[in-house]
Length: 157
Ligand SMILES: Cc1cc2nc3c(=O)[nH]c(=O)nc-3n(C[C@H](O)[C@H](O)[C@H](O)COP(=O)(O)O)c2cc1C
Image 1 (cartoon, rainbow, N blue to C red):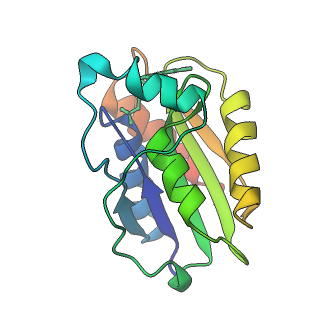
Image 2 (tube, rainbow, N blue to C red; image 1 turned 120 degrees about the horizontal axis):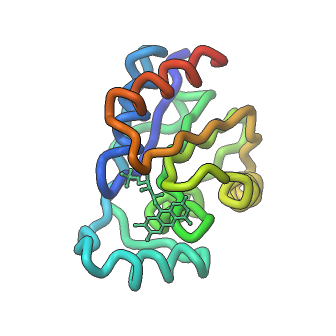
């Protein structure tokens, strides 16, 4: 069965990683989009605050039958040591019963522990089982290096 790669990306870094996974595993790629995209100058105030308080946001309808996938990669930037609100919404809306979930992050820093614990709890509340994870630092890292790191990380799956 093909895996599914679901991701949200504001500035394109998580998207790069999602594309590498989809290509490496011949997976279906699904981008989660904010219904009203967050203007970048306000992202720390609105998106950052929503992330810190574990809120979801309004996202566009999802055009994929999730029942067709038993492995789902979920990618998000780290916002305030947590997943982005659009990814919270996707997780809150979905029942992952019987599915293996592999969260992945991109982040400016190098510590994804808090974000991983946070997303794991949310996935488990939606009946999913976390079967792996990885995180890639994007700050002062070229797109080529992000792609190379993603290719390395995906070798484990
Ligand atoms: C609102 C906001 C909060 C952030 N908080 C963190 C953080 O807590 N830790 C961290 O390492 N990076 C943080 N970052 C940096 C992003 O995680 C990083 O730039 C990420 O690779 C962006 O992914 P994207 O290009 O897919 O949107 C934050 C960025 C934004 C916009």
